[in-house]
Image (cartoon, rainbow, N blue to C red):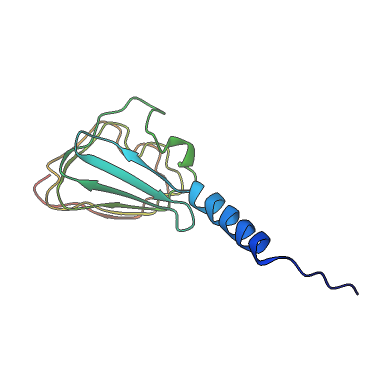
Length: 126
């Protein structure tokens, strides 16, 4: 068996590259004027945060749509006032979501085709 010694710089470069690839799998951006989203692929968690209304979407238009089969849990943080049209449509791995008291409305087909969604908390005021 042959042992190879790599320079520390090469190992550091490799570690930085792998870290960048891992972070690349995560996605974040805007989904409303003052509302943002973060998707963490390793946990399958989509978090919606900020203040105000989420944008209304058409089918297959959400920025996280390409991850729809990987989203297992959605967290909507307090301060978000609405869930947009088609927001979670076709998120076929989604099993749980908690909607905070700040949400006053849920858009058309927001949870369409979410066949595994079994754990949902909805405030009485909606």
